[in-house]
Amino acid sequence: MTEEKIYLYPVWVRLWHLFNAILCLTLIITGISMQFSNPKFPLIAFNVSVSIHNIVGILLCLNYLIFFLGNLGTRNGRYYKLIFPGLFSRLMAQFRYYTRGLFKGEPAPYPINSERKFNPLQQLTYVGSMYILVPVIMVTGWALMYPEVIPSRFLWTSGLHLTDLFHILAAFMVSLFMFIHVYFCTIGKTPFSNFKGMINGYHETH
Amino acid sequence: MVKKLNYRPAWVIFILILFAGIVFILSYSANSKADRTEAAIALKENKPEQKKDYSEHKHATENENCLKCHGQSKYSYENSESKKKNTKKMYTELIINREVFYESNHREFKCIDCHSEDYQTFPHQGNLRMEAKPNCLDCHGGDEKYAKFHFENIEKEFQESAHSEKHSEDFTCWMCHNPHAYKINARSNENIKKTIAYDNAICLNCHGNLSNYQLLTDKANPNLLTKHDWLPNQKLHFLSVRCVECHTKKINDSTLVAHKILPKKEAVRNCDQCHSTNSVLLASLYKYKIKEVRSTKGFFKGVIVNDSYVIGANRNYYLNVLSLIIVGFVILGIIIHAVIRTLN
Ligand code: HEM
Image (cartoon, rainbow over the protein chains, first blue to last red):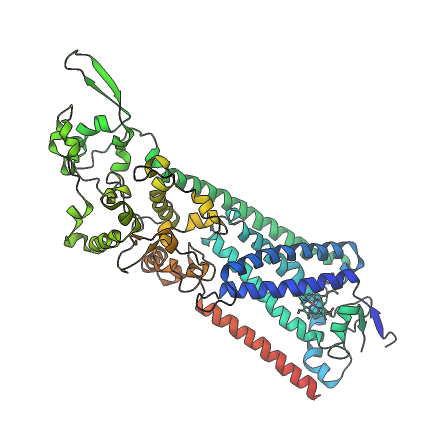
């Protein structure tokens, strides 16, 4: 290990990510509150949830724009380019490391450096959530806000029903991603070093 | 060569999105066409009539004696003094649209079943306008054949409704259920949206129409759009929910439509009352429809083919359990991983 600390998270990534995490958490909480609404035990009053969810959803879209344009215009985008040939075997190697090698103290198969910010599994989940799941949530979310754009029947069922299904399905997966994401962030030089990195910008190698 | 491969999945995604877009646009245009026909049906009562053949109806010929004048906007007669032919305008309230009448519940009736036989002479006698008109219960009350409609319960609910309390005798069944036009809807209409539009049109006939509204009051009718501006997605609410869903209270579960119209302060205004598993919505029209679909098309279709979507109210028990199990496994996995990690 030649470099101890690498500057990997520029200010805009850190700010984007901070807002993203706060907004996502708010959306998840208000979303669950609406989905499981019960007049007897309101987690948050339904109409309050609706307003918060709508406003925060719009803010998330604006924030996503920062991410999207940032990755388009700066070198940060290159970390998100999936290289497909051999991807599967790299994923398996990383998976093996997380389920066995890590416990035995073996070195990571794809150590983090300035050319590779994410290991293959990390990269796939980040690309999947940022370029598939979050866009699905945003598009279906806007559609639900303007329900008149949704065809009243789509294929075999109500268009509204289907749109909502996709919205909730993708949101559920992002919620799962968040659990796993936060846990995996504790796998660093120390359990807190990745979180520190997301604050000061420096990744500590181990 | 290797580089080129990287872009192939991007093309697949692009083509998929393009394809989804085309399906969306096609289904959208098909739908908007369907919506337009629906609107046309809802407006049919105001549509100029086309010549049609109604001879399949038992009394069509006899009824023509009345409808030759009352079936259109003008009527003619010969002045017995001057022997001249006169053409006059028919009062709009006295015009019976044949097409609507012969589709209504009362389509197999003779005009003089309900109206005095003396109307058969023209000019009609002046005292005929004092004629007492029959009430729903005069025919439908205490009759085995109509038991399933629970007319007695409806009558009781109506007596307690705001309509009845405010306007007493002036407010009759006919105000909402035009005897020449009304037809049962929820039971016969396949499309729940059409039922909703039909039923809401009944309320709007007065609450959205000043001259009808003022038959019972001198006040101007409140603007329904501003009164309901607290509803998010107002238009969607109006297209998907019947006025009576929030503005009535069911005393008896057996009537399909509650007739106890509540004073405005008591109307449902709490989102959760619809947006929860115990949704008041699911207790009425929607429950009826869901039961219907299930019994006619089978359980599976009844669950999958669902016209209605109400956030919070359509919670699927199995999906819920499944999602909790998945969350449970993920948390368990994380805990196991964390324990092994710290032990090593
Ligand atoms: C409380 C919630 C969250 C915490 C504590 C957290 C923590 C972290 C940390 C420590 C990192 C840096 C380590 C790494 O690069 O892997 C990171 C990166 C990242 N996180 Fe999160 N995260 C949270 C929520 C989210 C959410 C909701 C999303 C997406 C929907 C997300 C997407 C990302 C992405 C894409 C990166 C890489 C950013 C880059 O360097 O380009 N995170 N997160």
